[in-house]
Length: 450
View (tube, one colour):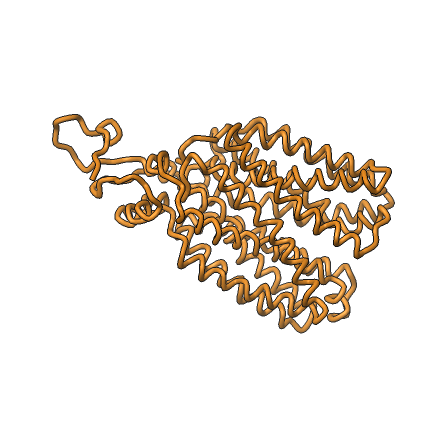
C-alpha cells in the first residue's frame, strides 16, 4: 500500500493528523487506459448510437407514416418534431437529476422510460396519440443524451480523455446507418415495426447498468468514499490508501444558479449559444438533406445513398479529430474543423457539377462531425463535477431549440422560393458564428476534471 505525498494530503511530515485527503481528479492523472475503459467505451458508444437512431429513424419512414395514419406531411413533421420538443424541457430536468441521483441511475431510469413510451408510440392509433407518446419519449430519453459524455469523461484517465471521448461521439454515424438499414430492411412492413425495434433497443440500458460503474466524482461528492475507492480500483488507478478521503471542487457547495454567475456564467452563455448555432448549422441542413439533394437533381434513391455515404465519411472525421485534439487541444482543432465544414458547405451550395456537390457535402460531413466529437468532449470539461450534468443539460437545451426551430425556418425559406443555394448559405452562416464564439472559451486539454 503506497503512501500519499504529504503535500497532497495536507499532512505535515512526522506529525499525526486527520485522515489524508486528495482531490479525486488526481487519481486520474497517471491512471492507465485499460480493458475496463474499452468495455465502458463500447457500452456508451452504442448508447449514443441509439440516440442518433432515435432522432432520425422516423424521417426515413415518413411516407408510410403519412399513409398509415392518413395525415399530411405537415402532421408528419409535427410527429417528428415532438421528440425534440420533449427533449427541450427534458435536458433542463435531467441535468440536475444526474447531479443529484448519479450518472448510472440517470441512464437506467431514462432508458426504462424511453422504452415504455417508444413501445406506446408503435401502438398509437392516431396522429395525436403518436405525437404525445413521441414527446414523452423525448422527455425521458434526454436523460441518456444529457449524461452520456460527462459520465464517460468522469471515468477516463486525463491523458486520453479527449481522444477517447471523440471516439465515443463516432456512435452518431453508426446510429444513422442503423436507422437507414432498419428502414430499408423492415420499413416495408410499416413504420410501427421500425419504432418497435427502437423500443427493444432500450434494453441496452440493462447492459449499461451492469457494466459501467458510477462516477467516482459523484460518489465522492455524496460522501460514499469506500464506493469511490472501489470504482477507482476497478478503473486501474494507482494504489491509494483506503484511509484517504476524496475531495471535489467547491462547486459542490454551489447551486444550479451558479451556472449563471461570474466566470461560470460567461462560460454557460457562450456554450449554450455555441450549441444553438452549431446545431442550427448542422441540423438545419441535415433535416432537409433529401429535399435539398433532389433540388440539385438527384433522385430519391440516390439521395439516401448519398446520405449513407456521407455518414460513412463522418467516421474518419471523428478519428482524425480524436488524434489531433489529444495533441493540439480542444479550441484550435474545433475552430479549424468548423471552419473547414463551413468551407465544405459553401462549396456544396455553389457547386455547378455533381462532382463538386459530392466534394462539398463529403467535406462538410467529415469536418462537421469531427468538430462535434471535439465539442461533446470540450463542453463537459468546462464545469466542476457538481454542476457538470446541469451545465451539459443547458447545452443540450440549446441544441434542441435549434433542432426544433431550424427545420421549420429552412422549410419556410425553401417554400418561399428563396432558392437552394441561398438557403444553404444562410444555414452555413451559423457555422461562422460558432467559430467566433468558441474563441472565448478556455482550453481544457490535459487538465484534471474538477
